[in-house]
Image: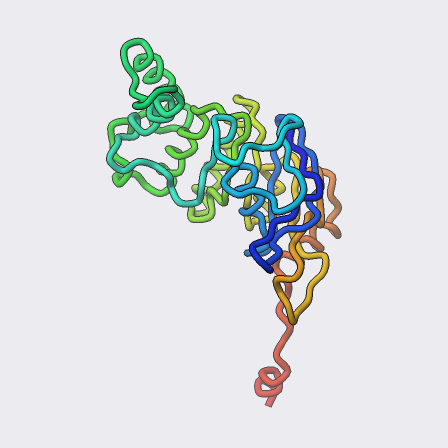
Length: 266
């Protein structure tokens, strides 16, 4: 479904990504991990179409991915992308309205009735039925993220992009979100790409995990080389040594300052 052929992304002299060569089958759940600034979100933006490769090809069904978002691709950000002036139900119904052709996107008659029924069913799936008439500012962070997820899934994109969607949530709420996304992914059979900084989250949610990191580095010119995919692992088929190697790569153990240690031992 998705194929990257020698994809590079540069901003002037700054190389962000280099030599990305991967293919993804429809229905896979790919999690992307790596240090901050290593290009994970940039790759997600290229899949969405808001960024384009500087070199190489990024294909969907054998054709170049369109350089603008469309109905085939939906996204959920860490910050809740909901409309504050609309109720929970109106926010979800708006997803169906925006998908309509025409100048206004307004829903009328049977179309509005069908959209309302679909939205109510989705709100029941994400546990927001009792909050359908509330406005987003009356919801908790976890509830607003459920609302954003409901919007994304109701649009029924072929590809769902999640950019650290749970990073701002408390651990307990994150576990609830994990269960919700897995249930919806299985129900709607979408292809999912999710950026996360949490390696455990990446292994728990995904069917496949990518680690983004630089294979080469120049301390005198940090932007000379970009990140590539250093690990591409099927979830459930990883030994402890490899897991520890990835964890150390993402969270390197700090080297003690010899001056500080000498003072401590004095």
